[in-house]
Length: 115
Image 1: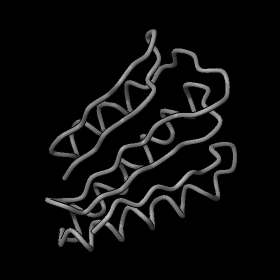
Image 2: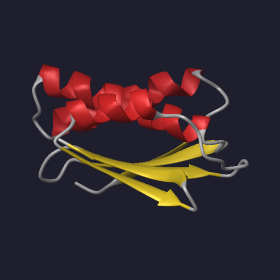
Image 3: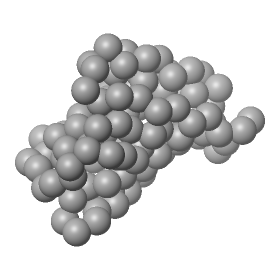
Image 4: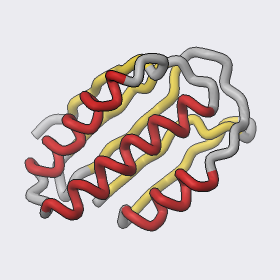
């Protein structure tokens, strides 16, 4: 299975539902159970919210189902700035097996999730 890359406008919250659907599809491909899939979808959504809070205009999300479900969400465009995201980061840390947060000049620029 190849990766799937999708780009969504963070200014339109209707795209968040589509992002969750894509995340769920990759959990199914990775043969994850319903609970793991729900946790993963929550974390993908929270990651997009973090990037929106940091001032990015859009998100590029790359999904993979090899060896488990994986998503890399990267912020693009806009006016990136530091933002308060402690609650979202705590939720992500509690729900996924592996999470990596990349920062550029103190601003979260991408989130990698794996289950």
